Length: 116
Length: 437
Image (cartoon, rainbow over all chains, first blue to last red; front, side, top):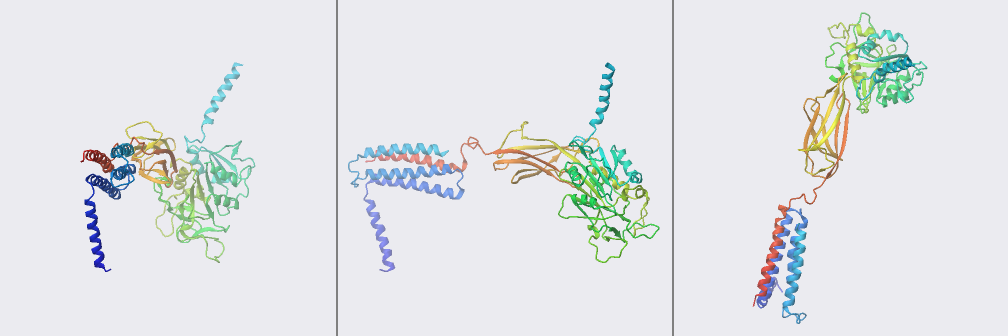
């Protein structure tokens, strides 16, 4: 096993990941996009705090928590809606969505309060 | 019966003015002075000095130093405002006076004048040491100066010296310059350089030394040069003033009237500077000059007039104080440009020089620092020759209340934006998710 072959391995790994991902259903891809968006927003806020300092720390926390919280809730929705998941076979997707909406409502209520 | 009452009331009314003319903080000049003498010949040989004091309104009470009836206080109240000790050879004071009584007298804010001389007793030296001044330990030593002596017809032993090395202070020595040197014949003393309360008013010239004039020097003298002080003053922390002189004869009529010519200079002065020097110095010692009082400390927020109980950080405030100087008969406004106020909590956060309006009102305005806690407005004014002013007023400073911050903090706009964008994202996502086939 030389260096050239590990590079080839990384290349084949990446390609196989891409092709496997392309096979996922569209609604799951939309959820993934949503998760990616909220994590990206959280990262921007962390970089901003590192530059400017943590003066209104409560605002920083509430902003980051809103992003991380929606990411977590979106991941939960994805787990429950994914048809390949044996655990949630009997759970109707509407129920999963309703849970998602309620939890998001609570999350945003908390965020608004903590934002100052 | 009626006549008796009239006489009784009239006598009380006549006595009232005498009861009112005593030393008090409103009139700081001393009034009643006890003068202790070795013998009453001093009263006539130093009459010029005593008359100059009497003409300024002092009540002098002459007593012998070992008179058994002398007392500084009776039933806890002091009978005199100042004490003059013209008794260098007293071995033991009479009555209830001793070193401790004299020190307590000074500690309670009263003034003291001590004149030692060549035969000064241990008692007088002890009193002087308690006041912060050390006379030469050799009991027969005098100050000798072979280049700064006063020229006279007889070739003396150069113990009569003419000195013009005065302290530079208009408050202590008066505004008129003393042109003639001062005649001095007596013992010298030294001051501890660490002591910041003692000042050399008249120092010996660099060629003076302290030794016994009648014997040959076997060892180098311990006190030499300008370290020898001939006349010193002490201003204690409670503003009591003490004058210590090593020569009683410098107060005498003979020295006041005699002419003086310093060896090595050609000018012959008709009259020595003793009278002017000692008169001006006595004005300072007895609080006729250089006595300050600070009243009416006021602080308020800019734009208001009442004094708040506490300030908030970043408030603008104004501090003002009135300082007056006693002129001998009335309080005059004190004019200076170096009075400073500190806004102090463990260390001064703000130190500003107060600007005055020439009528005694000193004021300045500044911004409260961005630190909360319990601060003090401190004025610590110590100028050479003036009484020290020490004012402190405590004031708390609070941080912002939470409705005193800006409603929307500009640095937090990205976080507000992120939270709202997450909400918008959630709405859009839920639509897309529901209506996606």
